[in-house]
Length: 601
Image (cartoon, rainbow, N blue to C red; front, side, top):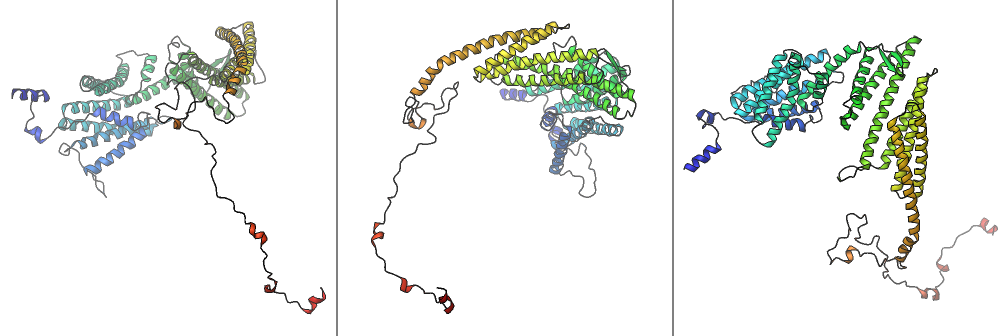
């Protein structure tokens, strides 16, 4: 009896339930885990709030129908949701998914292409108020009907919703901060208990709430966050951070519009082009801020994936600027001076965009080269082939050609533009040498020694020519010069290797030919070849061969050989020629002819 009492005490935490708890059972919902799985499986993994809202609507429809809690067939009559209504746990799910549907609808409006206008923002805030109303109801019902953990999670969920509403309204930052801090404290405490999955989810939730807490403190004035720190916070992922990112982007856009008032000119090749359109200024300023991340002191520590993402954002910003400039050109009318300024600005922005495109493709080339030269221990890693580098250098040649054509266009070419186009020509020669080198590598991997040797020699001459021209210029590109020197040495070494390999293959060609001929028989059967699988079924031996050797599985002969088969004999009817058949003329029908026909015999 003592042991049984000890076991019972270990299994049950806290005091024994009284009669009221037995009459009114406590419901349990793992709110965070339930919502996280639903969000990840129905759209929020990719930020699709519309899909998640449709899922919540369908889920609510099923719950209303299964609980028989509908609001009337004809006239809509809302049924009250209170403590006495909650007789099972699905009623709590009903309230929770109603709050989620309102929240996802608000976030869907927030994700509009140009942002919500005044009317849409009023609707967005109304949906957030609905989400807060249902979240508070969920918290009250869980406090009355749920266990302690469910009540805590519901309280944290309601605090998050209240904080998001105040966050969107840009007011009562101290109240929003209190809500976020209380929710974070609950999740920090819940993360200490439960299974491993629950602990990981609680830690992720705490990390998602931390940027909102820091931003509220920044707005109150308790902390001095820099713009770079805000951008680093905005790079984090999670559904709870999407509203924060939208707010941060709006704040950054407002700051750019204020800074753009001082950006009146665009500098390129020592020339200044006036900028009159405010939208063009904002787009150019955004691109220049992103360029500081690539060419600043922290550029070396930036991962490759983030660099590519920054290049994409720069490309988008400059394209927006060019679209605004061309719309201004269309509405400029007959003012020649304005048109000349806009054409010069469009040319300068297009040239900078071309330079950034070349830099991005050079980054892709460096990534491909590192994968080509690195020893690949991981079998799942994608193998870089020389043909991919040939394609990338084709793109670089096209980019330099387009940039040179753009700069050299126009009637009055300035000395800076002429020098810039000459630099583009030099870069194109270097890119041609690199392209020829990797084209030779692709021919070498295919076993074409003569073509590979000729291409290596041609790449060596191109590299030598480009190296001489780079050394004669005033502004020498040290990185390009070192790359061309390395390329020249590699071309010379590989051409020697291909020459030697080709001679060895020619020397071994008669021997290999005699080996192949010796295995040929007049009957067409290779006696030295391995037997097929159907010929050695009594032996446990694989017909596929070794894994490191690419050979055709020897299962059976296909197509099968012809075999002679017997057929029916041919019977010749020789008696037919010796038979004399009787005449049948007396039995044949005779033609009756008239008097006139007899005259014409």
